[in-house]
Image 1 (cartoon, rainbow, N blue to C red):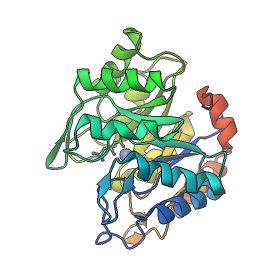
Image 2 (image 1 turned 180 degrees about the vertical axis):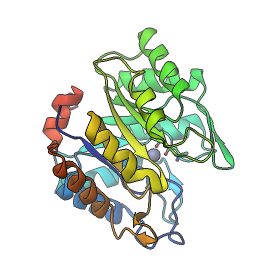
Image 3 (image 1 turned 30 degrees about the horizontal axis):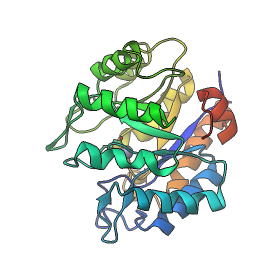
Length: 273
Ligand code: KMH
Ligand code: ZN
């Protein structure tokens, strides 16, 4: 089995200070959380950013600022910006983040219910985002909230828009989308090409259960305050690093080693810009 790639999803677009006082919002707070997660064992950070009021933004200048701050402290950490942004943002607004000097970006490969909202990712949008990422040499991570989203990702590959190594993130447990269940995870992992890699983001209380299964069967893991704000039942995580540390503990307990950022680059066949 390859070493374990841990992604830390630092703040997301939806989590508020009312839900947890530990959610980082300013560029400095986000960069510091990214650094602490890296020290704890994360090799990738999945980044959203916020504006001065703490609201989600896809402003490329804010991404550049945060990425600059992260690189001062953790120059080798792999940055993966979100192109999902927040529900209701326009496609062009969402896509700005790929022009920030990032190595990777999320590419959401299907429309889904997202709580009470609809997160829109139709095929023209998916193709457009994929081709723009290819143009600037940004590696996509296919975010799949449903089994059918894997088929959409494979369509853009078949159409020749995306080439190279394929990496998937199965986001399981979003209200309105595919539940976080071991059979669903295994079915999705069995549905991607045999030379592709995958990670799982279990949402809410499913975060560590999904992580443990992925660690055991050769997948990779995403954790972070974007996906889950609790370290255990009713106890808020004080930082993203605490969530990462817990994944490292589970991995070590069953003998799976943790990848450094450069080892993750080799596994994912990423070439730095
Ligand atoms: N905030 C969600 C609506 C991504 O980063 O690509 C979308 C999201 C997915 O977080
Ligand atoms: Zn995200």
